[in-house]
Image (cartoon, rainbow, N blue to C red):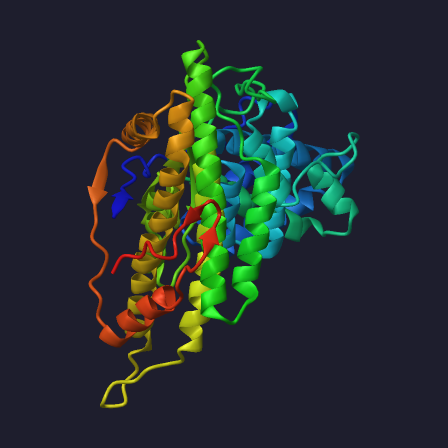
Amino acid sequence: MLTERNHEGDEMSQQGSSDGNHGGGESRRSAAALIAMALSALGSHRVRAFDDATVALAQLCGTPEGERQVVTSTIDQVAAAVTQAWDRGWQPADVHRMAVRSLSVEEQSVAVDAMSDELARYAAATVDHRWTAQLADLDGGVWWPASQTWLDARRARGADWLSLLSHTVTVLHLLWTLPRIQRLTPLPGEALPRPTSVAQAPGSGPAPDERILTRVRMLLAKAESTTFEAEAETFTAGAQALMARHSIDAALLAAHARSAGGVEDEPEGHRIGIDTPYDGPKVTLLSEVARANRCRAIWTKDLGFATVIGYEADVEAVELLFTSLLVQANARMLAQGSRTDHRGRSRTRAFRSSFLTAYAHRIGERLREVADAEMESAAPAASQQGQQLVPIFAARNAKVEQSMSHWFPSLTQRTTRSVADAEGWHAGRSAADQAHLDGSVGRGEVGKRRTG
């Protein structure tokens, strides 16, 4: 397993404590100083000092002038902190994931408003489409009128100044202390408009067809809802077959456009949260799904996510399949119940860790069977069109490796913890292996293409 160590995580901002750029009267300088005091108190875990600073900030809001200065200073510092987070490689979903790990629900909502406000400053065409989609998934967006800031609007909805400022400064502290990570996309304001078709941008790989993704989601929803393992496996295999076929079609289309003088399409990176417990086995599952779909997965353990690198259609397949398989694996794992040893001591954790690890390895084998069958099925038609799948995908695999080396130049190889429970291992493998893929799945006959 590949893991990434963050060597730049010690970088810290000055937290916007200087008020020299703001100008204005004494109340504004006081607001900036009080925000700096509150941030310092949070950084050193001095709860009382933090409370004192935020109470003083709230008291400044007792006059119209004081309120205006507090709002302006706070909004300016939050916007600067969000901008720095983008510069350090963070995307909206990444920031929210960190907020979920350490902040309250109300503070998470403040973080979404802060990101929505900052992104609204740019022309929509210059913001990467993945950022827009992430913000939409978080129910983000500007909901407040143009005549107000989001802080004023929250106050107008009934929030008291003390709670509102405490939440906002806590979010500000999180933003300032985010470490540097890999920048996987252009910064807001720097993205190029996304082509709507390959014809408009020769060689640019097409985005995953929404109709295909809808069918895949339907199959995976059926796999998650059924109580019959054989049925679940068939639905999952069908989803893998659809995505594998779409990946082949996308690669052929991109190769054809490139040979006609188009630009080279490039791999992309997408971060997926990896929660505890059993984060190691979960990463193993993600790595197996990624491998079956010609992607690579790198685990940044201390920040709770993994980065999947591959071409867009393949990365989309990995995220959909991994999310569904994790739901299925957890359901089957929990159905096994708890375990104790001969002395009555719990061995449930070891059993479940071994279960998930075995499940991951066997599912990976089965997904690769389906993908290989689709390749074999598609090869004759591609050959008739003068295209050879093996060299096309060899070149794409090499590009994925190059992108991984560029984004993660300092990787460490990590072996997951050895399996400590034989029963859990066999139960997990059985859960993944029980069903036969008998009959056609997609365009490939995979029922007889099982490995031991």
